[in-house]
Image (cartoon, rainbow, N blue to C red; front, side):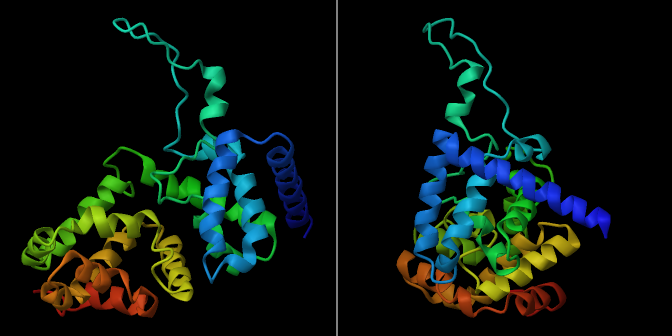
Length: 276
């Protein structure tokens, strides 16, 4: 209808402006983040055919100040000031655009890839403008919570707390103790990475899409710690039998592409099979 056509034109013109901004007046920090993320995309057998789409949509995303303005947990500008004792000056606010992309999105660490997180949308949407439009809403709704220092539901602290409680409620005390003894922290080294990436890169592409279909449908990120805890309990016997950090890593990090995430979630939620 006319309303849908008008919305499509607005979406297309907005995306065009952002791609021109990324091309002609690129933000240095956005360019650096994009290039780093594209390296991992090129090395991924599932997504490298979509490299150009991901690069264009990702560049538009990083230069899109709509993301910053509509994210409940967003970057706050640096406050100009001076350290009384050392006489050190903080960068003035006008330099913010050199420190962070216009979107305000920054990586949580060297392994975090905010642009790569949009790659799976290439399997759902044909046009770049649609990939960009959906991903910026996903970020404003969910992903921005992962970089917030907060205990509110859906933030990373809350998800991590839920993961640990879920495993312990299933009797996973010895499981955690064994992993720590072997030099691997269950949360820091494994579960945090899974949840931070939304299980992208661990699950098979189809299972990853199904997981996010459920997250969006239920509008709840609790499925992330539920699935992480489910994987731990599903692999518990193999973990307990592992004699080194490397063996535990092989058990947990390999074979994710063979897991049926939805079946695992159902079993973890509705049966006693995972209670040790």
